[in-house]
Figure 1 (cartoon, rainbow, N blue to C red):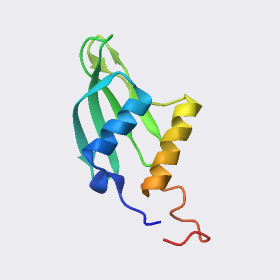
Figure 2: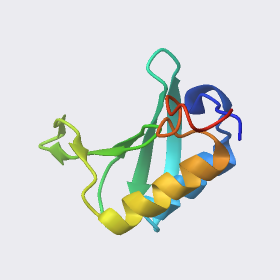
Figure 3: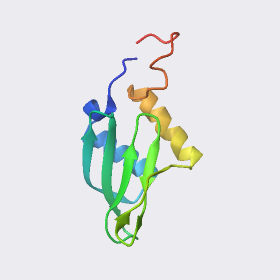
Figure 4: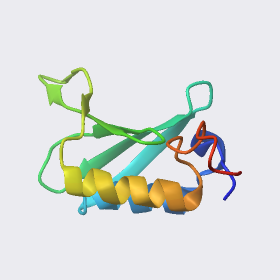
Amino acid sequence: MKYMEMARYMNEKEIEFVLKMVYPYANLVHFGRMLDQNFIRVSFTLFSEMGQLQVDFLPDDIYVYSFRDSDLLDGELLENVNILFEYRQFMIARGYSEIWLNNPYVLF
């Protein structure tokens, strides 16, 4: 397995896949690659919500942002353990996860 920085190498199809994993009815509006901090910020819409929502995909975590009166509130770690488990499996399988990065027993 080869480690890759997700912000640099994750393609749009993979970004849409992980977005649908978290929000099955989401429509991707745009995304930004935060290369210096190695995460991807995604803006999307839902059928049931008005306006855009935002989520940050980190190598091993997901931060969800909520809006109140059109002001962006602080991000909160996604608490759904099933979705987070599947997300981490995907990230490990693709080589984007940092879980094994500093483990001396894993060869990259």
